[in-house]
Image (cartoon, rainbow, N blue to C red; front, side, top):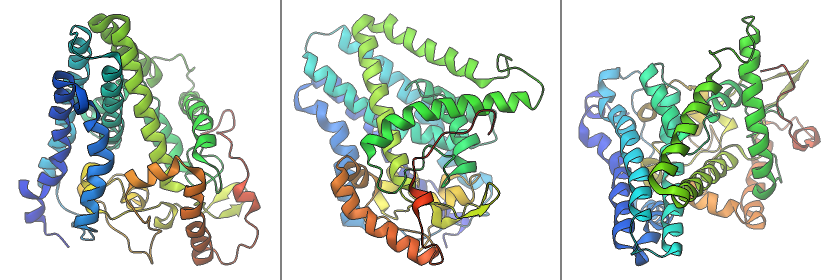
Length: 380
């Protein structure tokens, strides 16, 4: 176990700060152009995966009871990313739309890469921030989500996904044999509706209508409108188009990760509308060192669902005897998910093994593989 005094040193947090290096890479692409515009996806997807192959697995755990003051370097990282992403995204929108040294294709590829990092890093950091009790951190999470026009993810994740993961009521849990290209359009529609109904039901329990100012969707819409208006003001129609491109890529990156995290894993039905409690075995894990640096331990996903209030440096690793393990880190697995036959070849045997390991008493899995539906109306 990593002792608290070691955890508190900046050297322990330094590898996670490597994501900051993606910011100058983005500016390099905008200023130099040419082949440099492809560096963002190449580094994010391939370089970190290559480093995984060299550095191997990281299996150590920090003391989960470490005090908040020991985590300052980790908190500063997620906070610092917000202004850095904001300045880079909008700075590049202004710069490339007021310069003539980049071709249309170079601009498109550059902002595709921006979407890769606003999705891979930005949304992931917003996920860490939205789980905190501190209002400032939660608002910063909202700011990051508004930059990719996916603000409702906060409500959907906190009120729906964490409660109903691994059940038919969670749209984000990919069912066995469901390819990503079927999962993606279904989720885009269902998660917005389930998030809105969750907030509407929450307000109804207090005797308030959905139009009440306390509905966070008003804040979501206001922030998103501001981000769209700023992009248009800085870059005109071209700037707006580039902004929408990066937002679409970021959302695609998020839902690819969602697809991987719970594919085929279900909680046992207990009858009368009840399911077993969420346990470590209901999420796929990857202990690969470099991609956990990039994703601030998101791949320790079992512990996140088991203990959602833990900050990322305190998330615990689980062995193969305790929770299912992916053969590679998320970047490689999300690339495999884009090719459904390859994905099924890799993952379906693992799902069947998981079923036999944890639920040998279940012989008919048909009820667990039917199409999953969003939350019923009026429920949360």
